[in-house]
View 1 (cartoon, rainbow, N blue to C red):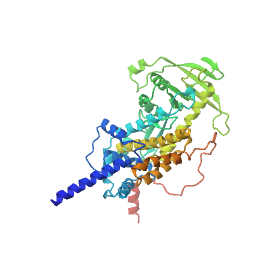
View 2: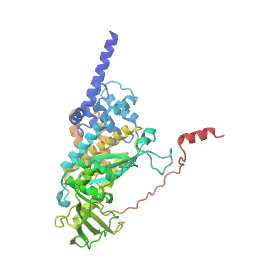
View 3: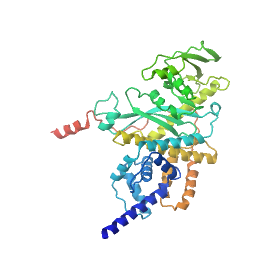
View 4: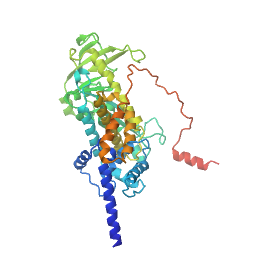
Length: 466
């Protein structure tokens, strides 16, 4: 009888704890509503047993983990302990084992789905920027991230070939689509750093389904090739990119549109190894591409002229200066990647298995989109563009108010969020046109020794030293 009573009380405590955690939403409910998460859980057929770490609680704890300065699993569990302690909902074991197992049960597709949803919503509601006749602009670029040196990670994401075995770290290559208006991540493709079909153009081909007709893709020179332009054309997407330096440009040929501005005909190359014959036959035999050379007169810039390639052929609708101004915004993708990798600390991942590494990446991107949502809502209130607000300042404000909101009555959460938006709009990015800064650090790093042999060998050498 006593055991039945204890079991009933334990079940009641667990149920009360779950309801508290899910109802309070850990202050993220306004940014990622529980109804949206529940719909995604149903689509992906995710079901956990009744326990403290339900899918909703696990997802929010994971989000807080990647948003926090200390991203250890033990710190994430400690935050749950602090939250439960404020509401006297019963003790929670301080061990991180159950939480880590709950993270493993979360499907990767679920987090990726939520990331694409939040990014797509922000992109659609973004105001036109007035560039290139107000058409929606999407940025594309690639980057890398390293991860713990485990056998599983090395097998799927090998280290650079120039590094000796045991001295390098596994690397994952990422190519992402980012909204120019809102800065939100629309989609991402991942692959190992080396090997066939792991280059940035190959990964972009995996993302073509995430682009919509009428959009303009802003990319670097490696995307200005025949196959990328042809495949984008099938999607109804235009390209504006820096011209590939390997292709010879002669402005005396083609259809003249103006000084150093013409339309030329690109002929279809031979079929590459990755392309099927059916796809090759389907693509056009020739492409009309506009090539433009724009002088760069800003002092301090590394280049004196910029050669662009684009499928925006109408010189009356898209003037030479408009193309240059539009392409100049491509640099914002570098700042977005810096926010993700440096501010959100995604440059060095923590998970020790490839599946969890990918899930950790998607969770960082989801957290990034949620912060971008706060910036968008705050900017709309005062008539600013989201990119005029500091990402780091918004993150700091959200995390400060979130922990304060744990002890806040549910009825006051709306007014607390209004205070968040009021504080966020004060953190604006300075208007610094043509800012010039040397790419160098003044503060010297601390002098230290580096491993020149695998750690196990170094440990053995120290133990055998006399």
